[in-house]
Length: 174
Image (cartoon, rainbow, N blue to C red):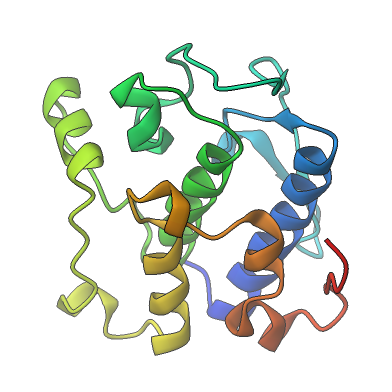
């Protein structure tokens, strides 16, 4: 995938985060956020699609599902997960939009899963030289394996980087 400028990436991420926030307030987790499940019109208005893996969250979920590149560490650990997995996938999507490819890549699925579980992300590499500090901060606040420290969808919407380009998105009430 070709990388986008930060303004377009922020617009798409803001819209998907808004959709995820809405779903999460209805106790629904999507479980398969990825580029193939996002429709864009000519104005880069984004729509989240394919709810085939979505379900209601009544407690921790344990089914291992989703697309390997976009799956969160807690899904792979099989210790129970919730809404946070959608935000992780959104962070992978953001990385793809800004850099052109996912942060964790390996043709061997077992090795890919090890990389995801470790979540070692070095944002000081030369591939990130064109990415702003604010965008890198958002990526690091999303792609943390520590679920309790990972941003919620509404926090992605209200993040300074997202707000910089999307003044129409803002949730003051949670």
